[in-house]
Amino acid sequence: VPVAHANAAPSLAMAPTLSPRLRHGARFAHIVGLVFAAVSAWRNLKLACSRGIAFVPSGVTAKRLSYISRRSGDDGNQGVAMYETLSAEEADDMEQRISVTALQHGQELTGVVMGIAPFGCFVDVGADRDGLLHISQISTEYIDDIKEFVQPGDSIRVRVLDTEGGKLGLTMLEDTKASQLDFLAPFQTISDDEWLDATVDEIRDFGAFVSVTPPNGGPTAPALLHISQITDTRIEHPSDVLEVGQAVRVRVVDIIGKKMRVAMRELAVQEEKEVPVVSAALTFEPDEWLVGKVEGTQHFGIFVDVALPDGSGTFRGMVHVTEIRAGFVDDPAREVKVGQEVKVRVIEVDEEFGRVCLSMRDPL
Image 1 (cartoon, rainbow, N blue to C red):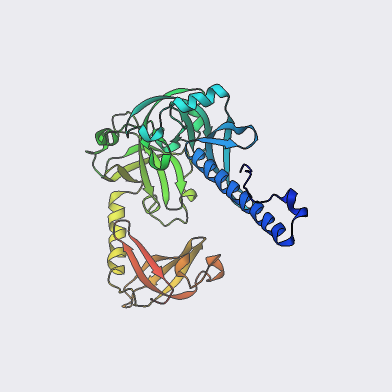
Image 2: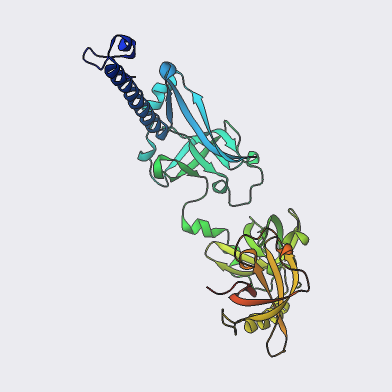
């Protein structure tokens, strides 16, 4: 707060004895002083928070910024800052801690879990702020409940993952590229017609994530089971066939980098059915209109059977909700009816999965 000096502008207490012009000047000077004080306090608070410390005006009490999370409420997302009040000894300890910016990428540290959240946990590694250990950096396996892996007060070994922007990101995963690929090594030499045991971990609109057991046993490896690879017939959603925790039999489709894709479909059936669909759709230009029949709707789009112009057959494609018409579409079922004839264009063909993306909108 600004300190008054002898040669400072007249205060508001003196204002009644001054002329109107001087009284206005005194008020203006007082307001300017308050503005400068507020700006100065805000700058100090921002600087302090960037180091994990906040100072509040009453008593200048030091506080540690534990974390800032985002919580969803009825009125949208809201930032929530969590602070811990520090004692004088703790405040001195914070001054002696190592700066986050002095830590090196990959540096191994021992820390104590200070708190947990659905997305990860906060770890005290002796730095001037707690580090975030995201749930994806705890294990290569799918984690449903973080409390099954860490608890407040646990002592854990971590490595520095990121220090950008003064924030501290941590990981418990191995660092070397070779170790990142080790869990896929048992699957590298498996033929595409060999069946393996797997468990469904998570279900999404486009498919499911599964944990696959190697042929000779050992640690499981994560893999993507695409919706087109679940059954020989079309399904509206993976949850129509699968559920979390379900045991399934899969085969390896391919391994690219650190990602493995698997299928529940028989290899021969897949080759017989996908090739004609893809080859037929590849013959059309993006501005060429075709006639199709609506076979079903979902919240994300419309499934359409498209007739080939020469009458030799049909192929199935999907019109995404954004390609139905210009403007926002809340429910595709309100735009078309099953069995209705529609005009569509082929805008994209996924040769690998045999998917055809269609549009009902005019070309740009």
